[in-house]
Length: 420
Image (cartoon, rainbow, N blue to C red; front, side, top):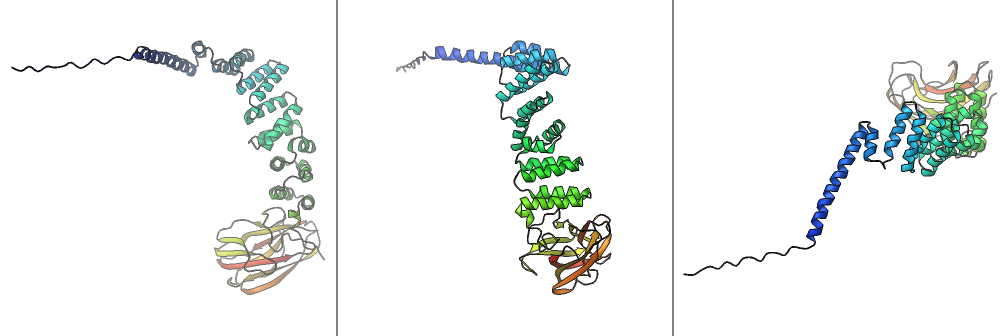
């Protein structure tokens, strides 16, 4: 009888490191569970507004005394709040928001010097954080320290941080003087000048806006056509025609781009459409109208390099959205001439150039209908301004008609001498 002998497998040796590693892993897991549980518990208490109990679990966390300070300020208790903020900053002095709130609580207690120190700490912790700089500058201004706040506001404006409306409002309240504000706050900052002028326009501060506009020109800041046209539009809206014309002429002295729009012996700006339309001021304006398209054309010209092309596609109405406002003298005789072409535009109920008193809307003169002209031809309009007319409007329109317009009209080479 044969017998099968089974040889038992050798028992593997146990790595001696396992006696150290495994207990260490188990300990780490237990420790993590304890810490995570404590953090979760403290966070739950924090969210449940049980801040003191949460702080007992996390006594080194600066957020808890900071929240207590916020609650104290909400309850109108700046003394308690200042103590809480101080404790938070002792635990973590790198909290710019806590420094700001600490400054506010100290100010509420009448401790202005200590409050200023806290603001300085906030800036030292976060010197390039826009919200911190703005709050610090605002607080300094509220404490009667414009010399400490204006440089900070100026830096914010230069970096376009989005605080411009608030800065302009605060600084104007503190120093309603355009010349001083231009010098210490705006410098050569074109966008800041634009926003400050808009602020003054909205408040109908005409004299201050004129002074600020002159400061913008004198500062030799970057040219912004929107500043020039918007300021002139504001003055025209106030019926300040002489002031608007003076502003245009002043801008032309500083900015060659403005000077190009008017030619000697011609009151019409950009008369041959050679320059980009300003859509404001004393330049050509084009407003959208249904079924009417307006664009520059370099293929069909009467003079120069460009003309204005108006395309009608089943257009209705009487106003086609093309106009220019021109300053003139009251009770004065003028002659306007221009060139047009309209080979595929029917003569009946076609467009015309009309001259209006810009304020009363009284018609002072108009051309004949401009349709059915196969080639360039020149039209002349003689008119006399009224005894109080100081601003006229050149406008492309037509007399009332139910007829739809289809076709193209080219305009070029306007001329309006200063007068007879």
